[in-house]
Image (cartoon, rainbow, N blue to C red; front, top):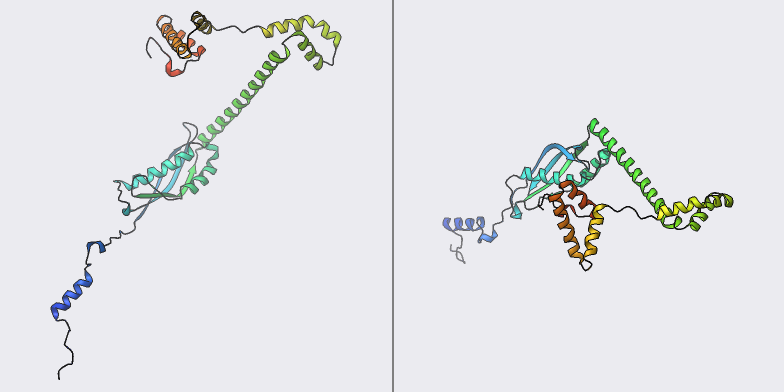
Length: 278
């Protein structure tokens, strides 16, 4: 009995072609390569610079890195790139910290370095885990001494600032004339007028001493004398004049004399001449 419709069933060759069309994309654009995800990690430890040269933290961490092949970038040593990147990030923070703050630094680095970042110019992404900061006992003791020295230096500088302020006050506001000096003395000594009268001559001498011009250094006198000889000298040429003078002094007077002159007239270190050379 014949079918009322034709038989369209494919033969063996047609079945093979249909199977091949399903297996192979029609265009190259339909092919998408998805690289497998890869992640690596390794422990690393090294000294880490602090704010004080020669005193280092001991830095131990686990660097975790992965490769992103879709970036089109490459690096020949992903492991080294990852470790170096983490170390650079850590150093930016540790180089501003003192050894005595090692506990706080560990918390900060653990927080900051846990964020994954791409190593610039590469296909590597890196972060750090299990961050640990330790400090040797001897280094820690030296760090405490260093802090103590800084504290003492700060106090001494503050005391000197106060002394300089008092000197300026006495010179510029108190010992300007005998009358002002006398009133100042009376205010601080219970207004003993009779005693103030007896001290009048002494106060007058103090006023003269306070208002006396300070001795001028020979370098400043030399510059002033030459500039007075050329009153129309411009500011730019005044600097050139100092450079020529320090050069002449280095040739005829030696490096020590030239250095003293340069310090007194305020020449920048990069513009000082010694032995006739820049």
